[in-house]
Image 1: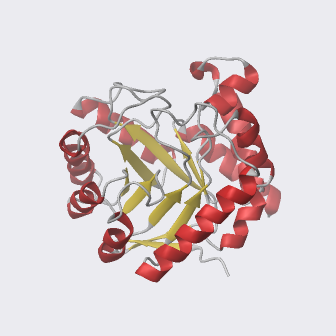
Image 2: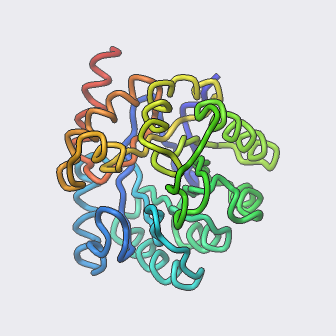
Length: 277
């Protein structure tokens, strides 16, 4: 039976209704908003806006994972994310802060400074200490599927059956997380991470299959190439397409939508709730 409540360092988050995670990339090279959130006042204004619009989680990223991005040093990642975590916790003490990282050391520092959820695009495959570390920290963990590293993951990704292969990976990692002692595991199929346009839509078409993992599901489609390439538009014009695919994902079982545009995602969530009422 799907567990609908996760424990974020003592703050319970109910996922029985769609939950919106707002993206805050504090990197100079993120694919959509790189360099936009670099000053304290601007960061606080954006966080305040996302929370007031209905975001339940603020997800901070300190290293770009866009296709072609290089892995930065641990020191550089910490310099980017830790001050922002502290800033948010100082001004928005009740907020739930997630950190998007592939490193156990960053996870430790992030949680010790006020974050309460780890979002790992490598699904525990980059740092062998990550899963045991998250278990010791006793925080929720997002396990995502990714094929290859960002620098080369979009160079002709190939699968015999993308749905089966992604499912098998997530099933194995969920089992590993449970065995290590992680109570709250969230899964993410990893749209755009080592997948062609056809792979992405095949995963979305079959997203309900992943409910068999009995974990909450995170949907990360916001303004990605899955939208822009399908519609032949620029990232700045991808809000409408993102909104459409978010509704599709919710209809197929997603519990959390990770977005740049919170207001619109919250409206989608409300409309979805009206449909299923």
